[in-house]
Length: 503
Image (tube, rainbow, N blue to C red; front, side, top):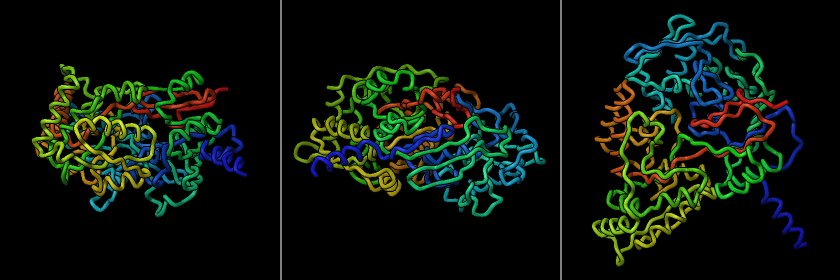
């Protein structure tokens, strides 16, 4: 009896996905979580956006290289000052229910997103857009508050795609009325999402007949599902398994630079982290090189800023090597003493992180690095939805966070730390000087001046240290050798319509 129980426990721990016969015409993709809804304006998480991008197409869209290309618009142009853009909408476009898609469709979507009554967490995404108007059915005019060279990429975001707003309750219908290559036919909460070809898509038949997205919150479980043949694509795997996976799978393992930064957020609204000296002290004591090169060891690079360096390449900077760790620890002790902490009054707080092996490893490593300072850090683990709900409420001391860029623009990484960013500003950071520097940088159309302005704003944020940057992400994926079309890219964008099965 005991042996049977042990065997059952071993089998249950191997995979949360029960092996089932596979449909050879269906591409099975693993997501790191279930989607939060059908409406891409209602959530900001990656899982929701990736499923939405399969169903809803905008005036532009991302190609297999993660670059904006014509979508429901066939071309566009802009004025010399970069403030007015015109998009030529294709003729004959229709939703799956036969309703025509016109320039006015995009105006309605934009107005819905920016409506002050809208609860969308993505409102700030559309902040550069001052006005949007349809001049006839096939010409969309977009006017900006300030230059935004990334507008074509911004308009590829599912929140600004052609959504079937003409149908009340469209997000609850099955199949969902779509404008993209696929339409959702079935959603079983926390189990799977099935997509089928959209027969009204302007390019005809998508290369693969069916797409199935499966939520797997634990990267180890996802890896095991892929190895067991239950998935064609796993979007994550534990960093500690890279070497063994590479030896076993070879070219099926994909590692690439990713526009994302991994960090922990200090709660600056309350003690002890309303004191910048304490935040700086803890930052000085972190060995980021060891974390990136030895703990994670997947090609991630150490980070002291939230903005990936690829997004600031137009502004060169002479960066100096960090001071030796011993010197930094001495500086950290001095700052803590000035703030009133030391052997007789140790700094004590909790580190919150969401369930994942690598998040736990990072939290444990930070606690160990701070121990020589006399700092006592408790570890607090919770499921992802509870974790981020706590961050939005400001119910934490120090918490695991990070940012994956919606677009390849520095301001997308910086704007969530503005004083008016709302719940997305987890740390509660508020500095008018930072806000002003970001506003000024956004006024520049010249790429170099714009990038240097963004770098200045990023430096102010780093000086105030409301967050603790650790490393810049790489994307980690497992892709079956039967899948073609996969191209590693900075956006880690791999729309299902860009993939096909090898013959």
